Length: 219
Ligand SMILES: [Mn+2]
Image (cartoon, rainbow, N blue to C red; front, side, top):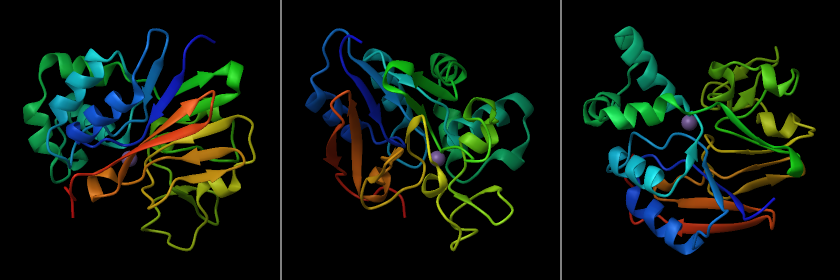
């Protein structure tokens, strides 16, 4: 592998923090940046984030927020839309939609035995076969082994606690005050849009870099 492979947690329209983080990373030729999805909604400017992502050659994975916007665009069904989605929907330009349409669910680095994904995986099934609704949305696993939201099942274990690997999984989607590092996974959504940090995880050195949010943007 030449260069570094760098994962970035949920940006959610926080273009200032994303820009600061890119500067801190001092990208060089051969470096690859994988955004872990949910780059849009909630924060100050989703289109500026997409501009920066494209200009810096970042790949972005699909998050549940991008999935909602794409589903609404395809079907016109308002059931997919939440507060703030419409504002983003109206702001996105054709190139932005093309960027969203191009987002894969996962990114695998076989040399490092590592997979990147927005939400995570059900531990009971092969990770390659899990649908978008699971891998972009899973936070915890209920007693029946189903993928659920943490808020709906507060006593259920995080999927990562049940994940025995391999592969090692780098993910976002579940905001926490601190990076959540286990033997076979690392969660790097440190709630930038909530006033926390925007976190990057750098491979192969396994180092993290963080930018503190300038403010809390989302209640
Ligand atoms: Mn998410």
